[in-house]
Image (cartoon, rainbow, N blue to C red; front, side, top):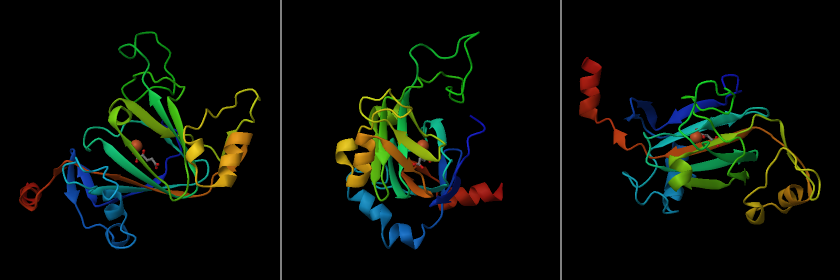
Length: 220
Ligand SMILES: O=C(O)CCC(=O)C(=O)O
Ligand SMILES: [Fe+2]
């Protein structure tokens, strides 16, 4: 959707041009203290990635009411993404494409389409509540043939048990939430208001422009 209230973003570790990383030094808070990259590396999630650790981080700021439309992260990255949430919670939805080959003539065109017009099943395959200071690692089929997104809402509403199903689907990680208060709201029904959220989306860009390649690129 073009009218999605997009977060403000900054690239850390360099810009990606034509699927290659044009590297830049990471800021100290990423590689020194609290050493986000080193600590993500310790999870083992990047053992099989080209550089064994993330080499690129997108810092996003979401104000209440901002989200990110369902999308795939694409093939420039090794298919593992570690997302650190800071500040506010968010509800992260994973979506599947609708069965079939994609858009057909005369088919309804809705927001539930990706950029190529491939229809997306609007019912998430899974929804996860991302708590502040939590890390979620997305890989496998959820990376390569699913989409993910965050609704652009100012609050997330959770229906009370037995109530008519609300707009929020079941939260897959309800049993693993760190905050008892948050778990009660999700289980018993209630509202979590979004505050400002800062996310660090950490990935490994397989192809990195070398200094030599860069010099050639600059001479052109
Ligand atoms: O901010 C988030 O948690 C998601 C960001 C995201 O999906 C992306 O940058 O590709
Ligand atoms: Fe993404």
